[in-house]
Length: 588
Ligand code: PEP
Ligand code: MG
Image (cartoon, rainbow, N blue to C red; front, top):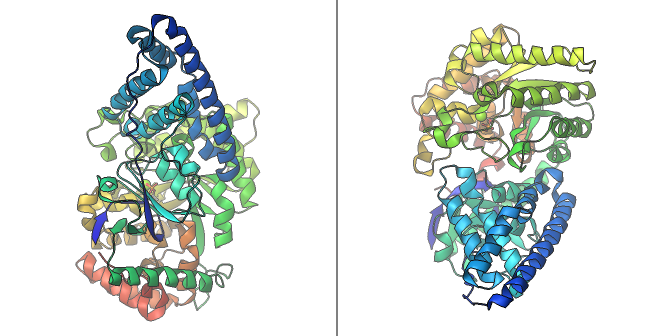
């Protein structure tokens, strides 16, 4: 048995046989042609490229039907490359210069481009290498009639293990057969990760060299909750996980009963439960899980899945789509939080020039340095605000001047709209993510200038304890239970309440059942969480009283270490909802 840890990008547990995909090594022999044959090779290339375009068009159509237009935009990059005259020109030039077959020229030129992408500092470009392999495979398929292992006709259930899955391989997955996904390469912003999550397949990326260590047919366990892959598990581990899968299914069924009951403590205190989403297409699912609105719409994903910057109209349409899906429920639109780990090719985030991207020109900083980009988004949000209850939220505010500047720009955009006679809601609530310690410490000042706070603990933890949230090697130091983090959350809630503004929390901890009592006890009555976690959180809320929660918060204030806090919270949760702990027995 081998246990490997990677970056979890889609939750859930899968136990199945492995299918290992060798995505890169399809050698194409060098075959030469006579000078008179060059024209024929050029024609073969043109034909293969035009057939590949037709394939991608078809795939984009299928993906639109299956996943919605946002995710299908990923194929825009493929089409743009296939239609790039410079690229096709390079391949033709290689055929002409070397007198080689079209397939050999495609093989060489695409490999050069892939190498170029791999050498980029910009992580986004490095992650696009999978798209290059995908295109190469497709064009070669039309030229020489065979492709690498396909995933659309698996004969049995499997966990797919690959060096790197291409986006179209991922989108084409037969979800009835593919139970889990593991890749050597990739990061949390790779298209494969985005798609796996949208498809609901447990997935882990960044497991360097794993595909070389597993053989097709071996049993593997993919624990997408913890980011752990177990190869050839022993009988005991297998039994534990089988138990966990069974337990999760049963628990899910029991949770069905609470989904649409009010999120109320035993003494009748109402807790607002909202959903976190990346795409409007997730809204019906969030409502179905029991969300009463959306507390965090991560609009940057509209940009991350597009080949070019979405226009005002495209953004407006996405926001209106979200509001229509919500049917009058509230929507908090967070302005672009691009940069650091969230980079795409739609906007140049200048990541390669930042030595420390998480401390660099990301998020609101990037927007304030790119006013046309920022204003376009604000126009789209304001125009959409006539269609339903919208709140606008600025991320990563660290300084009061940033907030004032952002609000001034919002006002400018309102004035522009007024001059143009375009309708918008002029009493749109404006709030901030409190996710930088400086903003948390100055919460009193900020509270006087905004309508609401949403505490973003994902970032607040990393900035408070100086631990990169994406770095596997120091992951054990990243903990929302750190007493310093809890202290900051407590202070922010108090400051917000004193000024009479709405305070919520939208970091991942809000969806982790062990934190629910603590957060309510700290005074948080609005939690925005990842939709799959909603029923379980509701179950906890309905099983406790406000006094119990306050006692938990008071006790936690006396602990010195995150370990004490975590152990205590788990014990307390076990007393109240043993089900929420019982199935998660496997620790690493
Ligand atoms: C956060 O930082 O807590 C948050 C909710 O936002 P994101 O995870 O998008 O940074
Ligand atoms: Mg954040």
